[in-house]
Image (cartoon, rainbow, N blue to C red):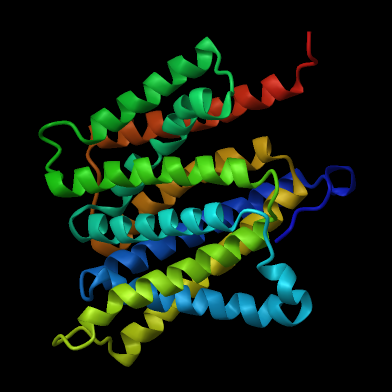
Length: 302
């Protein structure tokens, strides 16, 4: 959803944070559904239904009103690349969740903001303070606690989760660059379009295999997953329109908490003490990095 100009944006931080908390709960719920379905069906089948539903919702909700403005862009190649990157994230996430607990997978994924900070220096020319680097090191140490020897995590799943963090880094860097010229709605449209096409093609080889076609119940869960993720994106865009990004962004790290709690409730997985400490370090690092960034923007130039 396109953001309001800053001057006209209503300042409602409490409502914005509340919406963001609901959003990350929806995202964590989508992750739970993805794990449940990926254990039963090929990931391309699951994701093709999710993206097709999301694309259909966008076209029904905004197509008649916006028409060509929904997909008109100055940078189609980069938007397609961003969409392919997110499709890769969905694929790797599904593969990782086949063998990894949801909480640990999401926690490792949140290494991405640290990597974004590091890569933004050479790629986007952004500056990082010494405090930022210290916080980044603490967040990385939290990831090491989660994947430490003896944590009983599947090595292949850990590699997949680390790949997920790298892909998330690329996705966030592309998003930072594209927000300079593209609306959030246009970017969401290209993500769902590319995801629908890429996963639709990837699902074709599985269609004739025994057990690959979902039951009506599981097809409904796949559609529900698409609805959950799509509604989550819309609510999050709404939250960002009500308060500065520095207020809303730290709430992203609640995703780790929700994922761990829902993973315990649905799959009975309870992280051990060292893993919980690692998650807490990642959470604290993310919130502190957002606070440092907010203070840096609030200080007048010298």
